[in-house]
Image (tube, rainbow, N blue to C red; front, top):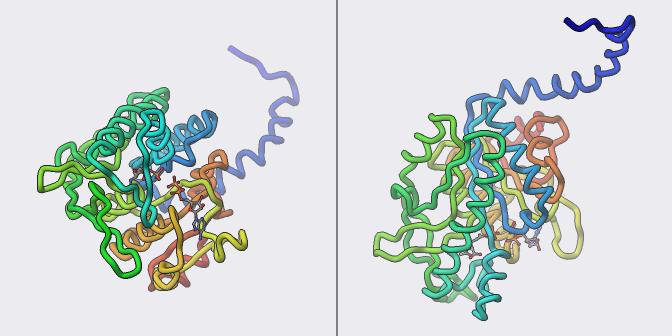
Length: 310
Ligand SMILES: Nc1ncnc2c1ncn2[C@@H]1O[C@H](COP(=O)(O)OP(=O)(O)O)[C@@H](O)[C@H]1O
Ligand SMILES: CC(=O)N[C@@H](CCC(=O)OP(=O)(O)O)C(=O)O
């Protein structure tokens, strides 16, 4: 038996703000309970050990809160570092890595063998939740060769793929079993090759195939800047049509990200959000508090409705 000293329980009322923070989450818990959230964790957001641990906490929190989180991870900087160590040069066209067969071996090794393993390990510090797979497993992702377009011309960028089919059965089975799938952006080609898929593109295609409520892209900027690199004004919300108009002017890594967000909402995903992965617990702040952060892309027909809720 434990007896609280006189007055202690009343003093505990100072804990009220904590209760209010939890209560603030209630409408969002009601809205998102049982819903699938695909979270893309970018390589640039993965640079700090504390941030990675906080990310794992957030994802497991979502799972305990009754959502179905699915993680698709990147690892661009980690791939580049490994290529550098091996003395192999690398370059990007329209934000996509030119991928020779030799580069592809390194991409596969770093994404599936290093980055995915690390995330699975961090998540599983909290329980037997995370199961890692690549798009190759169980035909989860099938791709065809993708070409870049530069000045109107098709450019061959090697073993870079675009996803043409998703068999979501394995991922759905893991979700139904209470697991957290952690997926590397590599796909099998119907032609027998293995393809390097931009992780934003992979997350977006998977979110669409799963009929996800939300696609969340964690990166190393606050969101989509209206006039990058001249100003750091972040666009807090925009409709699919507004985003479509901006796409031709977007540069480097933001292009596949915002293309992915557009494709996701056009394919039925409720909203797509780009968040600053450098802010600890940005995922929880975005999903469970009234202060939305980052950039939210909403379907055209819901722009005004969701604007009021965000
Ligand atoms: N309009 C924009 N708003 C924000 N960032 C932009 C924009 N255009 C280009 N960028 C660049 O895109 C980068 C994010 O893409 P990327 O480096 O591929 O990140 P990740 O590894 O998270 O996928 C930013 O760090 C920034 O340099
Ligand atoms: C085709 C292509 O560019 N693939 C990416 C895959 C990893 C990725 O997308 O990682 P981030 O999300 O950290 O950028 C690459 O090779 O870097």
